[in-house]
Length: 275
Image 1 (cartoon, rainbow, N blue to C red):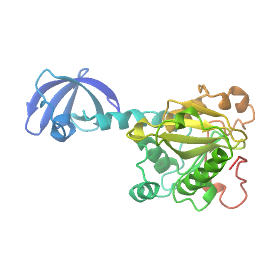
Image 2: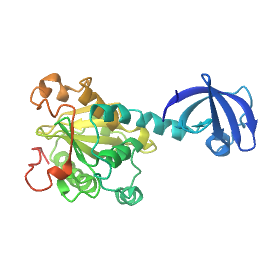
Image 3: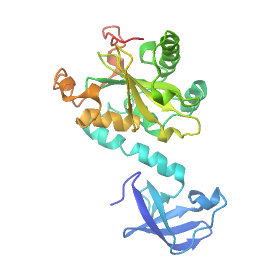
């Protein structure tokens, strides 16, 4: 059975003006002409027998709809960790998360954002995963939990640290690399950033962590949803989220997401950190 965002090697079995039929390991599929690279670039049109990498856009249609566009393949790869995360940490009931105008947020931030992050915020809203990692969200009424407010604050704080002589991590020494925070570790204050590099698509951004009470950094070649999934599942390689850290977590919170709205009444204290 085909599923959303599944990545497959497909073979073209028929071609028509509107697109091409494909076989995906015995499953019938269809690639609309606008979802084939030849629609957007000077590359050969699809021919019978062509083999290509494609991702499932809609498995409910007959035949299933695929895309062979590299951008859709990247987005699908970034989203593939969101569903396993939802199975481990069930999301709040639909409607609890605030609706986000992503175009407005991205314009204010000055960059597009990864599809998996937007999916997480649309599904969960801001809040705490597994009693440890707080997911920032746009337009949060509390600045401590707001994506845009924390981006500006962290940029100012880090500039002060570096001006005072603190060494930058090696990942920031190359060109105009930017840091954008997306979460932090509850209690310890470790801040989780994306490494935003010129010319690198948001779906290819990786995670870098700055410890909350010191100058050390830890880079991970993973999306934010993959990083969250590995922490929740206990498979992370991060030195800052070892099994010893899990010992302090209430067993009832281990596989639970707590919406940020429960903390915004003023009864929840923000985590300590250098910021």
